[in-house]
Image (cartoon, rainbow over all chains, first blue to last red; front, side, top):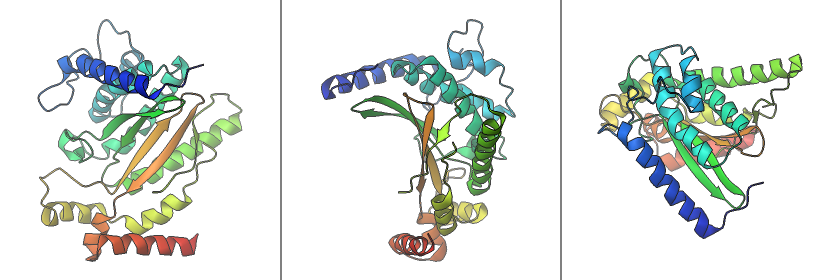
Length: 184
Length: 89
């Protein structure tokens, strides 16, 4: 069981984590603040992190999805390790991340078409940490493509169909249990 | 997963979303954003639980494009939408 962090130690952990993550990411970041995938973060000979290993054989539909995987999962994966997520949950959430990728690439075939105002460098995924009394929660925010209401609808119905399929098939994946959408 | 309830999401989606081409035009002509940049109409946030296999999904709407599209104040659009959704649900 994880101990509930106190405020001071929580802040200290947050600062350490931020320093460490930025230190680890910096060598790979270009002057736009985004991450180059050719620097050994994506496909590499000495893979040792879950997202690097699984990134090799996921069979992405297009280069955009591969780019989104190789850039987005670094912070997500590292944060989950730092926040002491159990390995099976790390794998589950990484596969969930793969699951939502189609809502981000739309019909586009270039970086510029999904530049958003969510992040300073236009990246459409923003991982974040939430400090609560019971511990650290990893979150991430996405900006679906401009035509998101079409794609989003298909993603949501795909999620529901997947849930029904898994429930009907009697499998025990413990697949992601969505809670209700909370409007502002 | 079984608890995914999109009812409220769909109601607000119908209130706030405008077609992509019109949104792109507003981004460019009204808001003078650089080409390729856009104001999102909706973003989704996922909280990844570390105790159970669960994702809490939150939807954030940005009614500003709808407000510009209708030529109305964004507060007006927002409160009208809430009142209409309240009547429907």
